Amino acid sequence: MDAQTARFIFLFLDGVGLGAAKATNPLAAIAAMPFLTELLGGPLVAGQTTHQAQVLCQAIDATLGVPGLPQSATGQTALFTGCNAPAFLGRHQSAFANGSLRTLIAAHGMFQQVLQLGGAVTHANLYSPAYFEAIAQRRRRYSVGTLLALTAGVPFRMGGESDRQQAISWDITGEYVNQRGGKLLPLTAAEAGQRLAAIASQHHLTLFECYLPDYAGHSQDKAQVMQVLQLVDAFIASIVAHLPPHLNLVISSDHGNIEESWHPHHTLNPVPLIVIGPQAIAFQSVQDITGITPKIVELLQLSSNALPSLNYAL
Ligand SMILES: [Zn+2]
Image 1: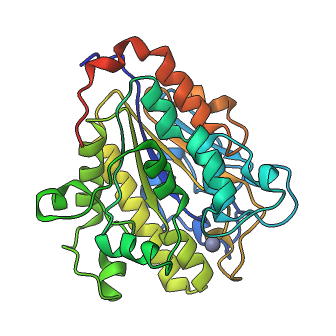
Image 2: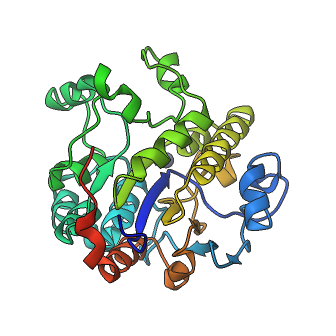
């Protein structure tokens, strides 16, 4: 494998904004995210900007010029396609992707774009037959990330015996899912991070989606908020500890929420863009959540002569 080949993990954290550095912001406490705080040179709050050779952190806009609070379906579509989804719909749309967002995802999804360059992509999240049964029975609707993989023909990691070690539950450890009747083999955050780095070493672009921060933010439960932030921080620490030298970890969010967990609503705050790896500084030009997919695709294009050297492996 060519050492020059750019590779990326996109760690999507739902509902993490950059709020004011005051005591009510759980992210202002060093105990919330000790690894990230040390790495970035300060807590993940408004004004925390880091531009080092291998570590970038900056605020990017999630409102995209559309009035109202940013929401998940349009925010995730913007992140994963590079399109201004709320402007396309004329509003911010919550939760799940409807028909017209699906057309944007099918045409401009980042998996599709990287596949067209000859790259290998994967969705590292664990899926279950029950999820797809619920969709077939119209009890659930597709998430943006699911549509991203589905429309690009990227196989889902279904959690059978053979690939149970090859996927990560959206809640990182499986604890949240198991408390609600799931039967997952529990992982520690450290094990999950190591697993994600191993999956990513076989692909040019690996997506992992974690919704815990948004759930915790909506819950307004201080203990849960702190527990989730610490879990996510330990997960990130483990990914970074196991990151091959040519791989970049890109972390961002669709809208703010957990940084103002004293109320149950999303926020207008910018969201963090954190990039750890050799291409980190190239992301300095990204201004808002539509800028991440085009930047990843551009950087893969620049090294696209090396793309065919990577064998596709799920
Ligand atoms: Zn939410």
